[in-house]
Image (cartoon, rainbow, N blue to C red; front, side, top):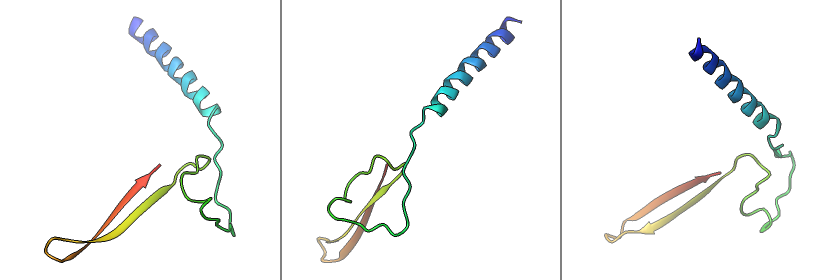
Length: 76
């Protein structure tokens, strides 16, 4: 009986915590069709969007004179 009461109490606490979190979530911006990019203003992070990522790509010359490519991706 005590285990059941504790379980119900814990479930209710978790429910109310998650409900409060769901109601207070940030409203995210969405991309708009026809947007004209303006650089350098559009470089960097855009915190009002839910997700974005950046790519860094390049080529390097190795010690044996072979060319190598690399790519690194960062997600936010």
